Image (cartoon, rainbow, N blue to C red):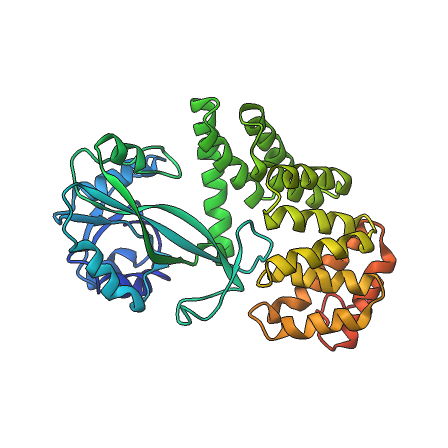
Length: 388
């Protein structure tokens, strides 16, 4: 692990990790809180490392301290579920005639339900689940120790290139890591700005490296630098035109900026390239709704839910579109179902946010219909019910 000022989260992380590892290596990059004391209390070997704005340098220092046969990489705001302890132990005692590494899915828990790849919490990991759901990211976290294996890139560091060069087989692992960073707003904002500046340097140094451009475009969106995000996605498209994710994210950026016709065109392009991508259809529908075309949005959302009934953002948007089209009973039926799901507590905010966007888009009638439903349901957000 590499850490800095993680006293708030470290105990939970180390409690989960201690059950499956033989030693804990904690590399501290300048904590001024009780991070190092907590790590030592768990029996960790703690090392200081002068921060060089280079995550790979810190990672490589950390794995150089390890004495075990295997390396497992974890961050302080992450845990492994107790449900997976046995499976994890079985994984590393398997005999293999060749060196192996495991690519692991990270469940990034979030309150935002319109994130690309979002999944609703389903109770499978009841003790670990948080927020309204999670979106996946995948990277190698578990690999056999070797002097040939080093992390690369100053930001969004990856060990895959050196593993492949050394002849390691990279296998998929079905044990997830649970990550809570996206829920920690202050920490996320501070880290995101730092990552953005480092990512900008990485893009400039690597010119048209697609991986670096994509990372920076995503980071720009996280920081709500929407214009910068659009320009970066355009830069990526100039190198790789057939990249639907770019059009999906550009569409999201456009509707955050109130450019709903541009958002609609991006959604059409994404659907053309990847007709089964649910976020592309979702962006298409929300663009139509914000343009005042609820009747056009409804069939798109109905088809989307038929194909992906678990996709709650589309369920909410369909209910909203029904209300805007004055089909109140259908809207209320959908809303009642959503109230029983993990997104239920956030429905007031979702109504408020959409209503505010509709007012900004000069669709006051639609916004008023949503407001009437929400206040009538006694679920109104205090901002919605505030002074005129």
